[in-house]
Length: 324
Image (tube, rainbow, N blue to C red; front, top):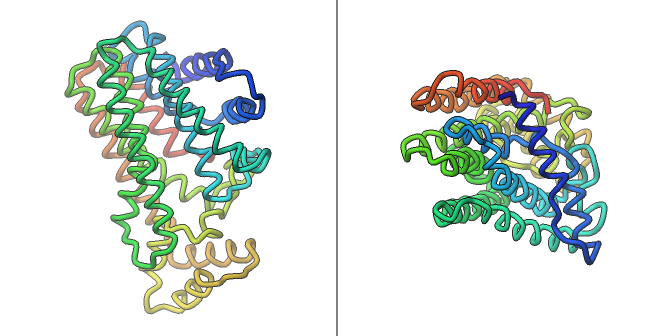
């Protein structure tokens, strides 16, 4: 199987899925955000995982879609909290409609995710729902920590890594775990796949942090420099704060972090120049690669044939090298 085959199956399933008809204002935003595309990596991971143990990987399609619907629900609500104007190169739902519509449509998406998960076999439902509930709560915990960090000046790099583990990577872990559960894999394999997803997810988020500063706006699909504008405590920012101590960059960085009124473009340019001077990007890339390596080490321990693992290895390489 190729990644393209999984993505085609996922996109076809998305095109066939309905969430409701009326009122139109409630359901149109769901169709809008689901049609914006994206990497579809979470449902793809579920299908890859299922295919390691199950010939008929299509059996996991609706459950895989549940992961993608839930992910997009979190994006819809996160965009409101972050006041983000762009998602995947297009206006965010709250910009195109309004925040109230985005909140309510997002709520329906969460319900839809549960509906799709209930398509798994009865013998797996309790385990799947229990794991999904824990994952969903952890994603919310991660988002709250992310917001808490905005008003704190003492966030450590360890706290930041824990936050992105909760906000981003636990869902990648669950996506791989879900496919393995559906395919009747043994508990050791299910746990190893969860660890693969957890570590790839942290690496993925660190890559996202790097792209937020250094990405090509046309490829990235989001506002480049958005994290800098919002004073987000990303790994790059925390490393810059640490490395600037006692240097001329400390005063300059602090000026931009405490400014209440500023030109956004000037702030992004100035802070990026500080990152460059302090060589923060190479440090972030080294840390990112540590987590990708941990994910691949867990994959090595998985007791399935090497050809079954190959697509997941290739996917990890794509996540490391991606530009969007």
